Length: 164
Image 1 (tube, helix red, strand yellow):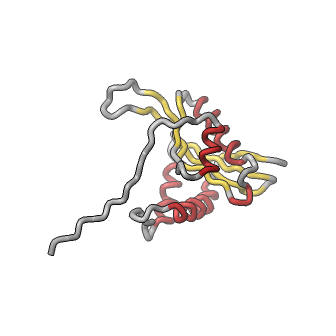
Image 2 (cartoon, rainbow, N blue to C red):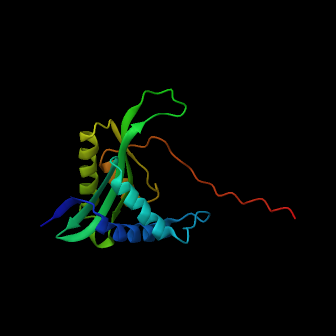
């Protein structure tokens, strides 16, 4: 059967939210804990994104089983300050593949599908962000033709002691 890609549906929200939140917990920054109501809020966000015409969502299935998902969007981008001409850009917010289906082509198929879709919507570029220390993710993105553009760095700050 191989890999099949389908549009996401509201019936996928619960699974997407559970997987996304579990993945986040494994990479969370010490000063960025999940909210107590994170699952409810994420499900509401997914519902809003589903209704947004700019959004993209696809489910990857391998041999008939749910294997992963990708979520993104396409929109007109304006720089801040607004010195560059507006352009249409695609953004991939998240790609997630279940452990049992990793290194089988699911992520590549999901991203290639998004590339085709954002190109059909007139985008001139597609962007994403990922943890550079995640070697499988780095191989995926570089292998699909993505190149570094801006590097973001993170440094935790110890809060100043509060005054009495």
